[in-house]
Length: 22
Image (cartoon, rainbow, N blue to C red):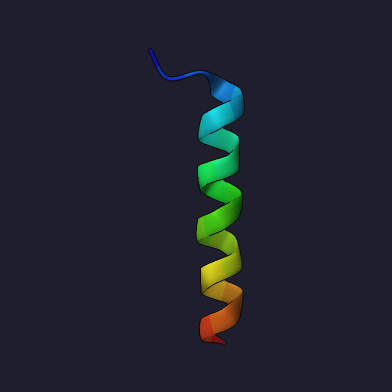
């Protein structure tokens, strides 16, 4: 079971990668 907290961390990581791309 994936907890919302863990999902939030994944989303934040993706956002960080996107910012790094820019």
